[in-house]
Picture (cartoon, rainbow, N blue to C red):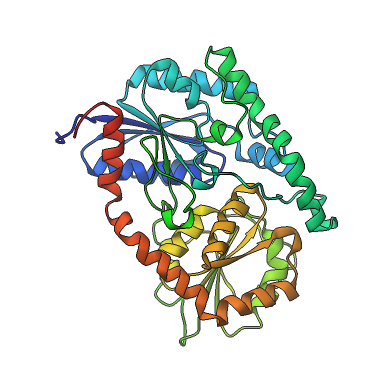
Length: 408
């Protein structure tokens, strides 16, 4: 047995995007390696990710990713009350049956209610840009109408209406809590997304200097799952040319590739493109790009000179962990908030997905591929985080153990 009283952990992985399954999977592996009894609940659609794991894996009903994406694109609350209520029922069945010492969720918002009703300490894996420990400066997401609107004017209007929009998005969680006799979160969307006994931020700490850690909130460093390697990766980089890794992820739009790939063709570089299993746009000229459904992103990033993605934290974490700058082509609020922090640090650049053009893409790519400052800042961030990453497992166990009342 391990030399602490933390013996069992239940992890619940939401199915909205691959990232919300990948992060709990990584945590489950870390905990299992420390002799802790782990159960991972994940949607059946992601069974391919957990096929050979040495710990217990069970199915978990979640909202279909397509419905999540539809709500996100339409600017609607990400879950309705009925969905959250069904989640609470499923959560409580698992919690009451397993009685873990701690439950860990990744965007499983219902645990804010169900874990409290079952009296089990609850930890959320989340991103620091949603932290209530720092002010939130809303960024205008991509909507169907934003490509036709003057962005500066649209952003100014959005800043004024965002508080009301956030209250609307918080309403289903507020109603859920009231139905189960729990207090209000003040219609604060940040709290609705991150309320827990402990928030663990899966991001580089240096990117978010305004987020202050305390007993209920801490950084555990970048978490980014990557599939096991398949095929030969050693030859991705050829003849000393820079390698550009393009991956739009499970929530990215393949449509931006129509402007991006022709711009990349202007540069003397090798191009590797992963599609996350999505079909490419009809008639797209992929030119020199080598195309894969999936690749082990961490191993590709280790060879890359530039990573182009949707700006979400899973891929940017991989790139920055290898000291590689990022071009983030963002659509949703998470991606904008994450890339804003990276751009402010100087380790990448942000583009709006509704403003991508061959000319703008070429200008942005030239800056990232020819100005060494971006690479230097990415390497600075890598070097700063290496010590935190090396101790991530012990830090994680320590944080979870503290919730059980143990002294370690």
